[in-house]
Length: 101
Image 1 (spheres, rainbow, N blue to C red):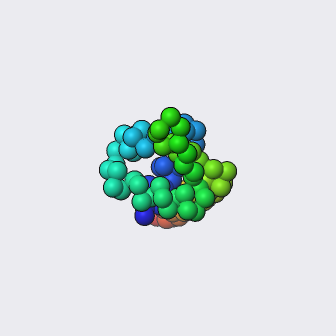
Image 2: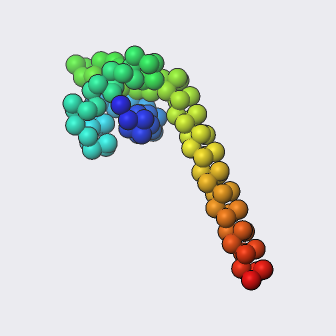
Image 3: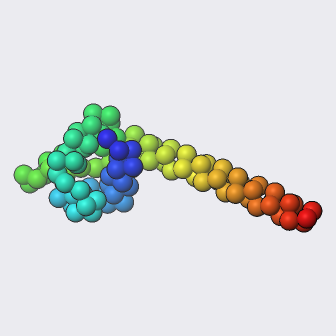
């Protein structure tokens, strides 16, 4: 399954604490047939948990899911920082070329 979709699910659950599958489907704008296998996989990995209340099934993020989300956010920040540094280096090189012309 898509890592980006997994992160979106974790973000939604992290922000809302507890969500019914219908809310997740609505917020993520995806089908039940796409979401259910992903949720099952994430439960198996310990990233989220499912529980029932009043005959309804709900999902919530686990501490492992929060750790995964924080780690992926940190990795994205490092990648963005690297890209910005490379762009800055390229800009400086262009400036040096233009200055020497």
